[in-house]
Amino acid sequence: MTSETREIVHDQHAHPGWKFYLMIGVILIGFTVLEIIGYVGETKGWYSAGAAAAIILVLSAVKFFSVVAYYMHLKFDNKLFTGIFVFPAVLATLVIGGMILLFHVVHGEATAIHPTLTSNEAIHGASTNPSPGPR
Amino acid sequence: MDSSHALADHAAHPAHIDTSTGLDSRKMAFWTFIGSECLLFGSLIATYMAYKGRSIKPPYPHDITINGVHHEGMLNIPLTSFSTFILLMSSVAMVFALYNVQRGDRKGSTIWLLLTALGGSIFLGCQVFEFTEFYHEGLTLQSNLFGSTFFLLTGFHGAHVTVGVIYLITLAVMSMRGRIGPERTLNVEIAGLYWHFVDVIWIVIFPLVYLIK
Image 1 (tube, rainbow over the protein chains, first blue to last red):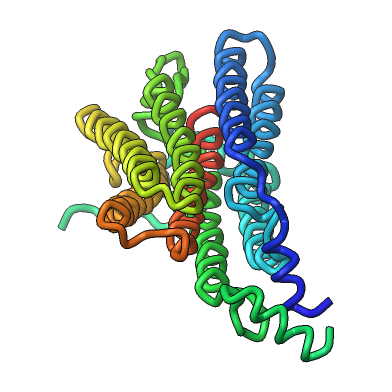
Image 2 (cartoon, rainbow over the protein chains, first blue to last red):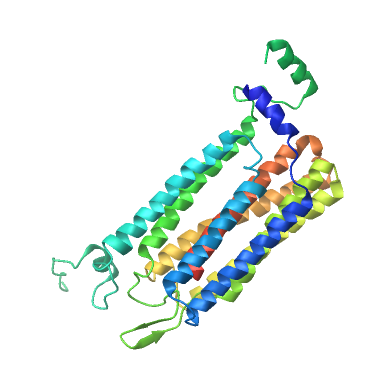
């Protein structure tokens, strides 16, 4: 199939009606409410911070894909648009994941909150140069 | 498909675009722009996440006890939940705006575009209130790592919402004057892509900044 025929076939695809889009909106609101319940549950000690984070992240991922697939029409549009969006989105996710891994998992202990360190020292390690005295 | 069939199809579909991909260049360019925006927000979110919980002096985002001293969290979850709800509803309104433009309903498309812009404006109002409150409570760009990364990330998002509101109001005025019809659906579709992208970014920011401690 050539790109021209693909475009024509795309034009012929029936997009969902307004009721479908309204239903997606209701689902988005419902999932946001569940996210907030996840936060409240963690605050009240119903479950651990890790469990709450997992619940909230899964719900937000579903919301993300719902908006991108249906409201931004990627599910119905040409696959080239999906590629143009997904490639940088995956790169961004990897960067975020990499930074979390570096700063909170691999290097977590060294950068933990310490009351005697300055913010710069907390991140880069304690300074070895004595601070200059008043002149 | 041979050339005669292609020509016949072309004649039957005058809206078809003659580009090497067969896709509209404006839409292609806009998706590329959205892709670059993904990387921009990815870097801002990565910076926030790297420094999350690294502030060594108050104010802190969430309630925390350090060395026996309890510190009240700064973030106002009820207010932000409300603004998140409004932003999601504005995305639904944007879908209805596009639906009305495709149907050629001038009045309907104007109303839905204005409602979308109103949703964005309420979201911005909540953000201005939040930022002002934070400033009065001592959280600024310079106060600590939380302040720097928080204002940078949410401020950039707010700037995008502001641009979106101006974009939508412009389209609503054009629609009111009869300059947006079914033949110009793509103009509204591209505005919709921008608006939904702003919504998608908030869908990521809201849990990472506000809900996960």
